Length: 423
Image (cartoon, rainbow, N blue to C red; front, side, top):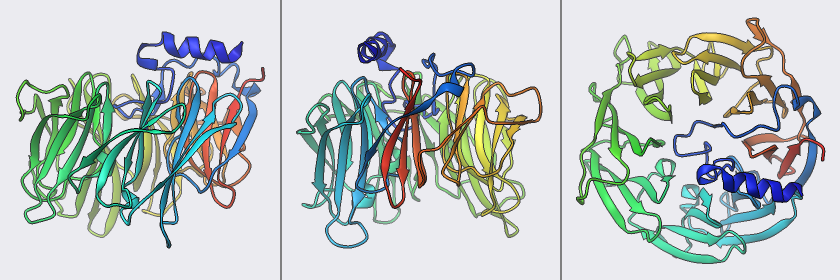
């Protein structure tokens, strides 16, 4: 009965929004879901482990979840021998392995990614042992290969995102001056819909995001003082080459420094783009959060390093450190303009937090997951409502889907662990 209710709930939500279909939850990479209603501040104390399923090797990323299965991908043998990309599907309610594919990889195995799951299809970016890079679509029920699409190398693997029936990525020329091009393909047949050059020279790397039918990418050279964020209609403009529909500048660091790099982290529902700025000013390393776009002026919040973030309307949750680039990280809650609201009671965090059901989940360097009321506790420092113990190892990523929490764990005993309310 519970399994049937999960299917009905996911199908009732627009575009299966109750399921965690790609890294960051959706193309905006907000690391949050608004559909969780079972695990809340009033019920989280009752959450217990439900199952644990072994994996081949630690997976650096979030499990992807549909109404039927939990999907993970790992690269094994990359340190020596012949590498493989291992894609696994486990039953979301029991953990039983549904299928496993070992896909032979080339020396470009570090480019391989689990990109998205939807419509009983799994999309991966693969570097086959025959050479090159390709999109490969697998049957979500069996793991069988349905189709492939060779990609002109090289592309930035971290830039690939899926938005509806479109898959976008950046490609770049290895030859000087290293022009960077944004390419959008139709997911249904992998045909190229449109493209545009976003940098005439200099590598523009890192994630892209999409919100409201607009895909956002960095534009300009890395050392360009006029560098910023360009937004394009993801569905194109009716022509092979499209121009941006929005251009937002990124305020340069002060004092000015050539040692600066930017990453787009997320897009808000209100048009705000969240950017991580890594810089070295006078020998001091910074990992700062900048908010650009939307109806307000740019906002800046400084950290020594910024490890990850999640956002919901009116609030931002960051795992970030102070003091030096290798110091410990805190979990901080900020308002929509990045002003501090509260912080967690311990400083042992790493990776991406996630938000679901009015709760913030943060992974600790001690291998534990601490869960906080997203609204805070009425004080500047808050204590966890619940601590989950996956059983040792390093937490590689977390996902929420309709009353279930799924955790990828690395280390000597790699596995996926599921938590839920008792049945």
